Length: 506
Image (cartoon, rainbow, N blue to C red):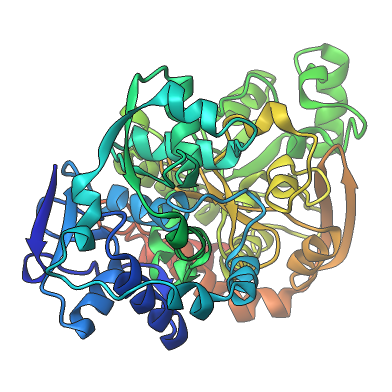
């Protein structure tokens, strides 16, 4: 429902990940003064803003008393945060390779003052100040005819994602039905065979300024600071990402040229080779759905899994089961069980922050002795379809039809996507980054980039570095956050378990 609401009835969220600078706020004020409200703000039923934080701020300083608000259905805090991220990307007619940096550069090239000078100022009392309240229902077929050849698959994907969350907004068009903002929304409507869609019409004179304001004006993201816990607990392996075979991290040492689906661990010869190479007492750190754990147990390997975000029913994290797995893990290591191999397979792609990844490596290194090898694998920069797409590489249309992913800039090789479920970060590694990750705790680190994966085999411990960093690693990993606001709460148990194993007082 769309309403004209007093600004006192809505409030900014405390977690909005966008950072606004004074210059871009001034540009946004120019937009409101010259164009009014072409699109509404979005808020939940409590009045918490999901999209439009900067417009709300600028309206307050301009003395504007009202704004057009479209209310969403009630949703959890985690879903509101995810939708907030998506709004910050999904309302612009962007391609996947567009970033806040190149959008800012394009905005700088636009002659905003010249475009604005052609237009009179609007007042709050003017009917067309809140023109999104007076949109028109227009034939989708008619709009498609006027905009053929202008489709942007990525903008369509973002529109699909927002519609999936129950969010609808009008197109913005010139009198000849050419879309200035919302080409992805039109594309999705045409694919769904909707008969009509809402349109806000602007004049030809307004088109240049409108294009710049709705498609190029963007604020920098601060997701990595505002959404730390969300990105951590959303790192769980999705239900659709189930395996029926061992992942690359478990086979590359015995079958370096093979894809996972081509290596049959149940073949007696392959099983003997695997056990000869890796032994029969291993750790599966970040065990996901426990698929590899169960496969290896079926051939007689003693596997100790650790998975802090075990997926339960309805694709939600089952904290009770996750904590139970963690306690069994701690019980095993406290008994001093010797491990022949430690595996970190695919986990390091989903861990959103470099410091978190280092802590995982430290925890695993502490479980090694002089004969233990650590094996790690993760998707590489060179093999990542998703990363290549957000960097503007073409020729990937078969995957572009569904992707709604974009790059974050707090670290190289980072993307965020999966908004339909839970926003999830993916880190794609270079061989040198992978080497640097392990060299702190191992004296020998061999890294290769093969089969779209970067792989590491590590041995010979740097015990001084491990002991220096281990307590902080334990305090982090065994107090991870959960979507309900609670934490794992196993730090004391973990400190006791590692202390007993290593014969030290942590």
